[in-house]
Image 1 (cartoon, rainbow, N blue to C red):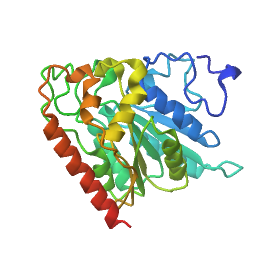
Image 2 (spheres, rainbow, N blue to C red):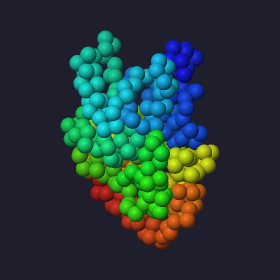
Image 3 (spheres, helix red, strand yellow):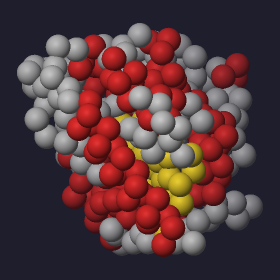
Length: 298
């Protein structure tokens, strides 16, 4: 993790080998794919308290290959807004853009960071915000967040969470930001295309990555990518984009895969009374609404 080691200075190597992340971490895979998508770009990152900033390691070394600012849990969009303003006041001699990217977990996005996130989106700050959603507070022991799905067991909901998951994409779309989209680590071409599309858009851009946490989800590390693939195929995690808060575009249609397969692979749901028929009905309603919104956008 030596910051000066030229062996790990490849342009597409955002997260260097030797980091302390867990095996099968969806966040790690997302960082690797982000680095590949941004290989030809100049950018810096703002990361609040989360697994993502722990991954950097101890000063003076770092596992990241770009400049990173560590912010408090609630303030990454505010800090990133300041960085973006400074960049605008100090353009490089080659006039290449210097992108600012927030990288945050669901705790710092759905919950603790919601106020500064909403404020930055409302101001249409020129930055990219990426939430890697592992559906828990993964860095502090696996507590429930408002991104945790109903019936999932966490350290603070040992009997299963009673509330449904917050719809963060729709919340951000309601701010009428230029671009919001979901990303899948099981769909690298779609992932790269969306990141590169966002690079060409000015203003606030928001991404949501489905990021399995084997430790918190009680899953096999080798199955993380397959879990995300199952989530997309069954409609649990739809892949879509929203332009200017109103124009919807579905990127991958669910193929009818039974969501029971997705739930069965996660021990955080074991022993819980999951009403699969209710789940299927809810997913059909959710995906039907997405299709209706997409049809209105044509």
